[in-house]
Length: 80
Image 1 (cartoon, rainbow, N blue to C red):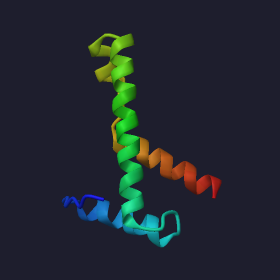
Image 2 (spheres, rainbow, N blue to C red):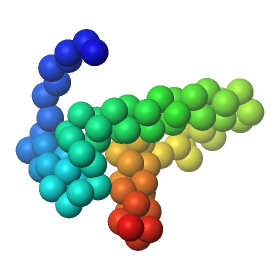
Image 3 (cartoon, rainbow, N blue to C red):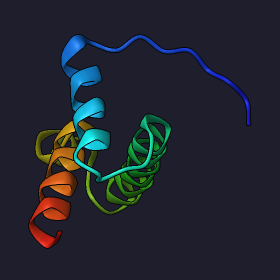
């Protein structure tokens, strides 16, 4: 697998560590891969929305990936 280096805020790094430490993920790489899958899905959904709606309504009603990931994590914690 190719190696990529990224910079994270201290809060982001702590969130990743917490996700692994609490047993939700086996490694930080798993957390990042899932976040990227969610990001890719969000981009694809955004493209679909843009096709269905005008650009102005999509921009005003869209959610950022961080919010979607936080919702996803909360759902995982509730179902665990």
